[in-house]
Length: 292
Image (cartoon, rainbow, N blue to C red; front, side, top):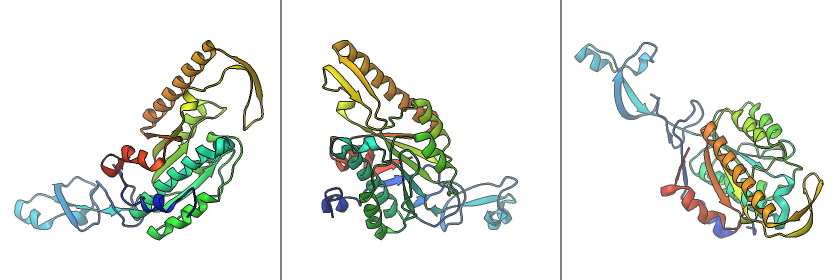
């Protein structure tokens, strides 16, 4: 175990669950209950037959009794592939890599939850481009493989969410849950984030990394600010008026992310990088369950 994934951290990754409102057809049996008539063995209910339904689900004993066609609805338990798109751009490694540490721990939590439910997991780092993935990991014993992959990640250049997520969207993946873990700061702006998110043909959750210093920086005076990803600089005189305008811009950005999540029908979570990650998930997962 390492400072990034301590023994206590790994040991706590056993009680959280993801519950999907709808699970894609196909794949392996796992722990998600599909809402459609399935091929399971647990009886749930009856409903009237409609043209196009699978006649194999007709209850012929009821037909002989009532001379009407009814379907037996059986719960089918399926897996929900989980694809974690993890921001590893250069800015994530500033200030002792606090953002990267929080992001990788979030990815570890999500992977552990999915693996505990017998779901397949893959980690896809991105920065200037979509990086090499962890490959598909399955089974509860696969967690250490995921942790090793996360431990070895390195800075991946400037942030380009539209290019990175666009490449992922074109991969031949079975439909599942995509979780994007990022601060969503991109030079191309919120429109690029929206274009990237709307192109994901999966159920989507966004995990936004936040910090108090992003919303309320403690700086003043004559400063030269340098973009850690592009190297561009700007000279600025920080006054109360400038800070007020900055805070208003941050609030507008945060509102924009909320609107993107709402338009896409995505779950939106926030994780404070200045606080331990695991205790925050107690609040993010009501009753231990994240419903997506």
